[in-house]
Image (cartoon, rainbow, N blue to C red; front, side, top):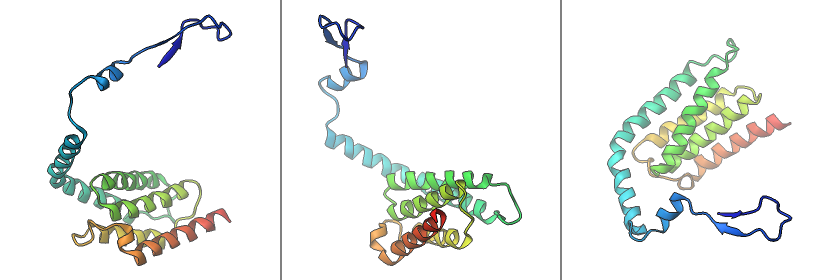
Length: 172
């Protein structure tokens, strides 16, 4: 960080001096853990946390499904469920990508876009949500867990198309 000794910027006689933050000093301090070892340690910690992550993942998906199942958009003007569903979808998208559940993150991110559109006035479309919920259930299964959206082009392209068509209907 650079600071001027004179607050008047027109003063050419002002001098600049470097201010070191505590973090900057520690970051340049000799020693520490080499990058490769830090990455290895982080990977080991993620592997160690995966069993508890599985439990959290099941709970998060089940809560999202419960919120969606209890929705009655035609009879209920309360839309607070959209915020709750968005929060759970965002949690799944964020944490899923950290743990490398890319397909789950892709589907969850799409659900986030759907709920964001609904927050701004898009109509409820149960078919699109149900399609993404089915894809979320699929992504949770053991044989699909480590796949990326690109590994299942029919599924991912189909989800992208229905999401785009729903959003283009909102903009028109």
